[in-house]
Length: 256
Image (cartoon, rainbow, N blue to C red; front, side, top):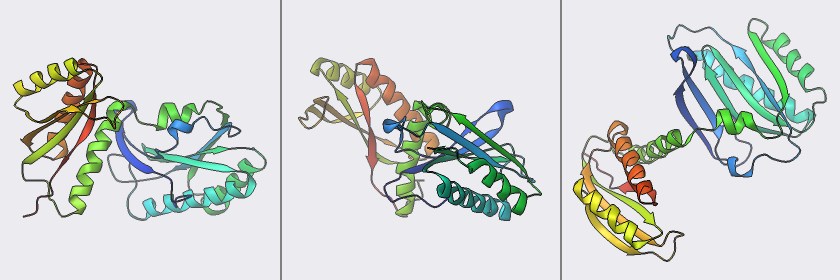
């Protein structure tokens, strides 16, 4: 789907849904803090059911390309009728649905139905428009929970490493940052992390952050997602235990 402007931030995540079916969600991550957006009071959800030989229910080959083409066509149709914000797509169990927030209903539904009947009559389609002033479809369904967002953040770092030529197989030093409002809590956290074989790089004041006491620790670890995600998850738990926040990690690029 063509981005609506260069400031949009899109991402994709996988999760498990009804009957253990995997689902893939692609959405705008940058909208959450500004929603609900005034006057965009209706959500339009529409898409096609497709056939696939894949056991996971995801499309293959030309079907995947066709679904993206349909998404672009839907946006063009809606945009001609009313102001629209495309917020994401959800794909699960042989179906792909697009989610739009619109200002006015006008002739949107009949135009979409005509598109499906004229060009995609061999597919079953879904079309639903509901009032959603609080943007619950976006905030409550499409937008990932905290645990998933943390997983996505780790994946993002790993993608950057891979794009730089790192195959993620070599263990290396990984630095982590944690922040606290009180020095005593920072020191308690420091002592606990030392027991987990973390090395202390820095423990002091950082006046540029909301939580002024900064703890930087490091350890030699693997960086594949199955290794790093449990580490960062535990560091988040430990930070919260002492009323602090975990603020992410970085490492070196290792090439063979």
